[in-house]
Image (cartoon, rainbow, N blue to C red; front, top):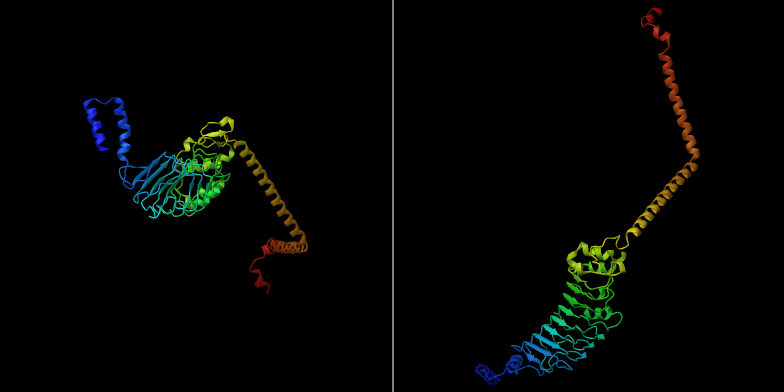
Length: 369
């Protein structure tokens, strides 16, 4: 191959090679030169070193056998893998691939992922299963991948059933993911039960979410998901009063929804295409309703206050009626005491104003004796 390359260069240097040959050489020689014969599986290309293996559009029916033990990045695109069975990527008879950290399996027509399909990949950190028509996802599909941090399932759950959250929650149990991509899966609700603790980034773009309920927002505010960032662009939000909790949540912590300014209304018709974040409560149809609710609350408060006062008055009257004899006796005693007091004052007044006592001199007493 090196001789052929040298001959081509010689022909081109002498000007005897047509431009078409030059173009073909430029297009075809790099893959041929990068093709490694040592430790590289058939129908694949090992670039630079066996650490990076790429199998592209060769219609593989199963994962390639005899992968290099030191492979770190593996890409299989355009295959027809259909079913990933247990330990599908472990080398037959030679054990696991401890160095493999990046595995890209987009558009490989994968329909089922069985138990422990990725067993033997202890160092796997990034797994991409996007654009595969998954119909079955085993609860233990990702067991044996303790270092898995990024999982991409974009447009992969459309055929998983009406409630893809249940098999997804089972498959993600006991994982320590940091990034989860679920874009383009037609989800109508937040897969709250499927979110692993410690998740830091969740991509829910281009789904069928009309909003998030207070319960779903409470799950996002829980301690295990306190650092989560949520991507919600290209969802058909329904901009009515039910959207207020989500808008309030986004405004209070804008860092949690990096694409908040891209949120658009899909309904009602008069708000179609409008930016959701700047909308006020009265634009969401909550103004009149809130005023009516406030008036009803005030009326109910006044009624309740009147009932309480009536009960207090009734209790007071009952106490007076039951103690009427004692109250009468107490009033009589009080009246007698007041009368005695007044008589004492009256007697003293009469004594002090008697003119005979006032005209009597103190020296008349001894002469009378």
